[in-house]
Structure formats: C-alpha cells, structure tokens
Image (cartoon, rainbow, N blue to C red; front, side, top):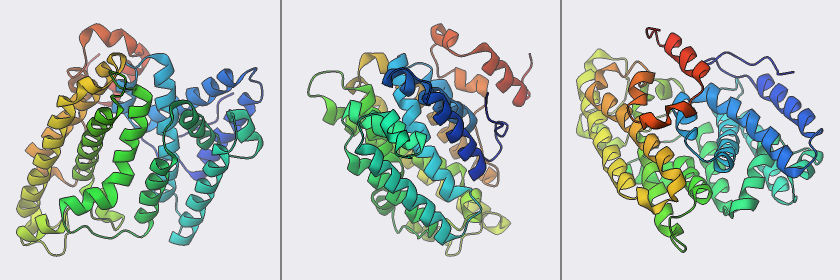
Length: 345
C-alpha cells in the first residue's frame, strides 16, 4: 500500500515525508537481503524525483540501472533536508533543530554497515540510503557536510558581493558537492581520471544552480533570499531589489541576462568535459546539460518574465535527448506530462 502523497507540483508537508518514511521502513523490514533493501529505498526515492523534478527524472532514465538507483538515493537525501528549509512552515529555530537532527541521523547511518542496520537504529530511510551510496562509491563525508551547511545558511540567508563570493560561499555547498556525489557514482572514463570528472561536475553544478537562481528570483525574494550578486545589481542602480516593481524591470532584466551569460560559460566547460565520465553515463549527463541549457537560454531571452517560474515544455526537453532512447521514458509519464502542459494528444 502506498501513502497518500500530494499530486505532482504540490508541496509535500512534514507529515507526507513521515508517511513515506514509515512505508519504506515497513517494506525494507520484509527485504531478504541488503540489495533488496536498497532497491526498495531507491524505488521510493524515484517517487521523490518524479514529484519534484520532471527534468531530472527524465535524464536519469538514461543511466544504467545500478547507477540510476544510486542517483535516485542521492536525490532524495538532498531533497528532503532542502524541503525542511524551503517549505516546512516552521520558524528558524525549529528548522535548525530538524536539520541538526537530520545531520546527526546521517552521521549515525555512516557508522552502520547496511541500510537495514541504519533503519534499525532509527535513521531516516533516505539518510540511510545515502550513507549506503557513500560506502559503495567512496564519496567523502565532507561533501555532504558542506551541503547541509549550505542548507543551514538558507535558514537565515545573507547576501553575496560578487559571483565568486556566491559560488564559493553558497553554490559550492548547495550544488557543486552534489555534482561531486554524482561524479563518484558515474565514474571516470579512465583509471585515475576522477579529478577531471570532478572538475567537469563542478562546472555543471555551478551552471545548474545559477540557472535555478535566475528562474526563482521572485520566489526567493518572497522567502527573504537574494542569490543575485550585489555588484551586478548595483551596476544597474538596484540597491533594494523588488522583482515586482515595474521600474526595476529593465535593469533587473540586464542583471539576469548577465548572470545567464555566466551560467552559459559554465555549461560550455561542462560540455567540454563530458568525455571525463564513464561512457555509460554520458547520454544522461549530456541530456542534463541540454535540458537545463535550454532553460538558461529561455530565461536569458525573456528575463522580464521574472515573476513567473519558467520551465521548458516537455516536447522541447525531448529535443535535448537522443530519439533512439525515448523508449526508456515511461509512456504513461509522457502522456501525463503532456496533458499537464496542455499539449495535444
């Protein structure tokens, strides 16, 4: 029996996450091996990806099954603490308490030898799943600590003087280290080639995060957050940002175009480093670059639509994918997404 979770696009509450955790924990209890337990957790992590990111769900379909399962576990372990900070209706002290609890649970999970042991010790299922991925792939624990530090910074957000300050002070923890997780799962193209794969993952992580900042300006403003570099804003005479002020529309559009251009430079470097990854993962990584690059271009072309959260329609996303691989996308999923976007049958 599956828990009743929100429809696609709806916010998940703390209770929704708890119901999913209970269900997975129950199913893992019936698993006959660690591999079976891991498969159960990954299957439900796939539910999380599908609910929160159409684009990432699509590109992960092009990974080999074993690597895809690990990527799904990574995504859920990143998404759940991010939702604590972003959407749970809690005050700052309560969010920090939840995040500290998650950190402590993950550290405990690292000390166990299996998912089933971690769950028996009371660790959240996706923290246990991520710890298992770390053990299997050698992901250094300082990367996830940096990620959780970035999430904690969002509880009481600050500002960033320059792009470099933004990248090193926030994007490193929120996105670059996630790219490092994935690089460890994907693997390098040649023995000893992990440093080059990590370098390419860094470029892609920066590019993806900058694009997300560009499309979420109004939403972030509503949460009291500002991820646009202050020097970019001040160069346009914007000292107190209000994305919905018509008088700021044109100068803000120039800021967004400028940051979109910075993101494009990072996409280009990520594309150039694509061959650093194992061949069986390149289709998925190339699809990720292609889909999000389209979004970056769209935001750069239409920055005046800052009050909308822009996205790339499904049919346009598919242009970034190899047609010979479409069979990997569930037909039911494609049909649902087309109806949601108002596409013709």
